[in-house]
Image (cartoon, rainbow, N blue to C red; front, side):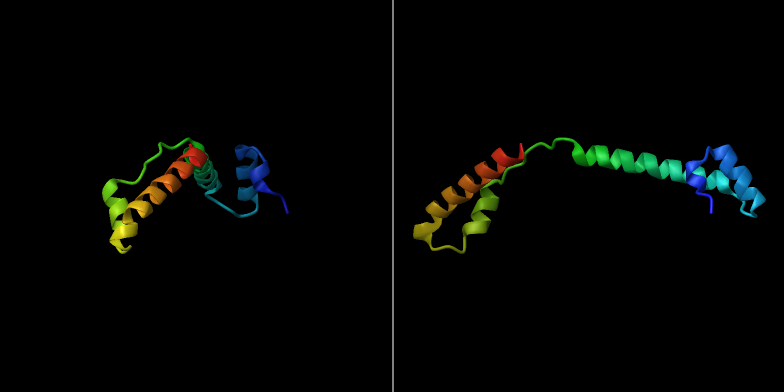
Length: 90
């Protein structure tokens, strides 16, 4: 079996037509579009992102179930973890 994707589009279309397939030109155009989309998504996935930290409210909501006496420590701990994550991810 001939791998039509490895041939130039004109040759692939001629062979496919001879074998009874039609619309191969549209198929190759669609494959090309999908390859471009995949490349764009890959580029987007690999670009550096801006760090977004937690707000004071998010920290509070994450620690409000902790005893009031330990809440200050928990908030400091949350900020320390956030700082380490920022260091590793930027």
